[in-house]
Length: 186
Image (tube, rainbow, N blue to C red; front, side):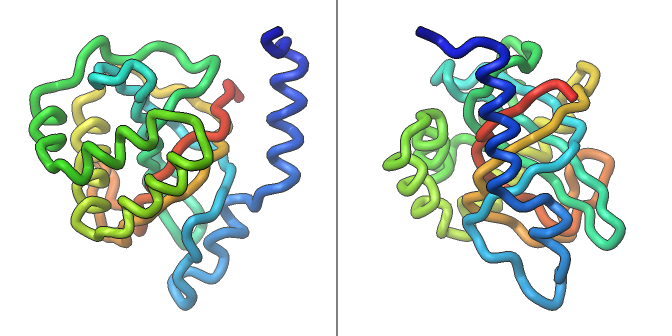
C-alpha cells in the first residue's frame, strides 16, 4: 500500500531531524573542505529537466545563497510532488552525455537503491566526471524555459565541484552533485 500524504510528510520531517542543514554542512568553508558524501537540506529554487533515456532520471538544478557561500545544486534522480519540466533534453545537454563515465554515473543515480548509491559515489570519484556533470547542470540551468519552483530539498551529496563555477547567470563557490532524498513544495 503506497504511503499517504501524511505519511510522506512525516517521513520528510523525520529525515530533516537526522541530517545537517546547508549552513551546518558548510559553516567552516573554505578553511575546511566539506567531507563527502554527506547530506544536507535547504531552501532552494530548483529547475527540473526531464528527457533522459531512463525515465526515472530527472535533473534538478538550483542555487542556494548563504552569507559566505553560494551553492549550486545538480541533483539527479526522481522525487515526488515536483512539477514536470522539459519533455526532452536540449541538444547541448545530449552532447554533454557523450562522456561514458558521466553516463554511467547517471545510470546509477537513476535507481533508488543503496548499492547503486555506493556505485554512483565511486564513479564520481573521477574529477573529470564531476566536472562533466557540473557542466551538464550549468547547461540545463541556462536552457530552462520555465519558472523555478521554490522547494525544500533533501539530498545525498555524492561529489562536489569547487568553484568558481557558472550555473546559469550565477557564479557559485561549489556545485554539489547528488541524488534527492526528497523534494517537496515549500
